[in-house]
Length: 636
View 1 (cartoon, one colour):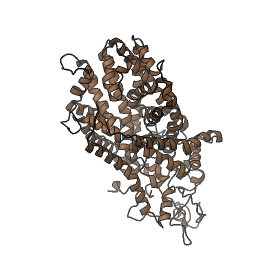
View 2: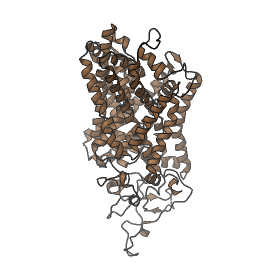
View 3: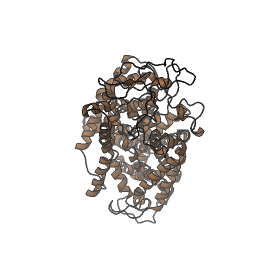
View 4: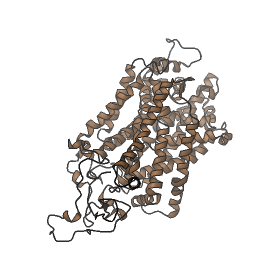
């Protein structure tokens, strides 16, 4: 049962053993020989971690865990033999790009660009990338790489906020739509005259609602599970489980296909699209001559740009921290953040060209305006665009290609989601994951598959919209604000910059001036504005103009409260378990834990070397004892 012992961030009932340094002498060292560190030294109020080995003999602070580490998870090139590292930097970059580039790049960004002034929308979009998206992205990559820990353990820096990323598990709705696209791709050519369609609706819209989804009349009519959608859901989770069951060593290879294949498809679709008659008409509406720069004076356009860049980069979900935690310590996380952010934004723009060139052709052959054939969200990906593809010679080929691309976009996001969950479990229960990683990973996939069955019922489409409306909104914004506030304002922006320089080398003051300006002021202000704006402009979810019932909205609010409430609950627990007065407990919960710092001893430099931990609250009778402790022995 020791595998399931109390995780390190809780205070277990059993008293922790703390041994003074002079009792930890090597076997061949005489008892009267002075130890490598003094018995007493001045108290360091920064409460940084103690050195885990004598300064003359650096070693990994987790060396005792290496003997039973499964060999298939690591290789001889790994810097961290306990957790493992990415085999190649390209594995990491493609995983990050695959995680950031998702379905929203294909079905949300092109429509937002079109509806917010076309090419004019790229101006606020770029500004929001520079001031909001990139600073938060760089912060998360640096944080995970510095401590080589997942999204829970990184909050040893500010223990009061340790469950800020608790709502990462709420990302299962996206994969359900991808599974449906798999069914839709295989049956698109069934659109013919054998079905009775309602006047005024596209055949693809009728097929999508009546055949593929078997959509009921409302969320209160659940109906039965659509068996072929459930099988596709199962198939998708089998692919995910097989790809991540051994961690980054397997998923890092799969992303060479799942992350690169969408670019191949988009390139093929763009080349085919621009050769079609009427393509220029669609591109003109996208970012061409029809662009409306007067839209820049509307606040809604700027809000949409900030919201899109924030969600497109997948910040505050914990995935960026988890994936970056497997980097080598001296990896240049700054250049990686720039590459991934730029690739994500360029992909969105590139996808818009592929989408609107073919929509322009559809408008041309039907004698309509582009505005009459463009749809938003799911309808763009599963109704409007398939209808346009059906009018191109070789429609079956183009349709299957397009929907397999959507499938790979969703799979990449799920790889990172599962990796985030398993990384967190591995950090909390290292012994369990070393011996039972595959069963634990497959168990997570099975649990999420069962949760997703609600989304493949006849009312599944309504549940997906409900999840998207509530769970992917305020909870993530709250997490992002607490994240940047906790690291920059509580832990300390200058201290965090020093941590980054330990990894990428010392940079000029001018280099950090920009990041300080964003981290301290601009980014938190923008995130707060987005949160307040979304609350003020809140509208109840609806489908086809019909609002959801009150009980459905109640469930949505309950999901938000459930996700966010863990943050204050765990903060209260941390304060209660601390020692001293209420004020002392609160202050101690805001200071870095004693074991905060780089994962490996060889990287503990400067203030992370030779630190001590207080065995009691500071006072006249306080005894200061230098100690050595491992992460599995230390309370978080």
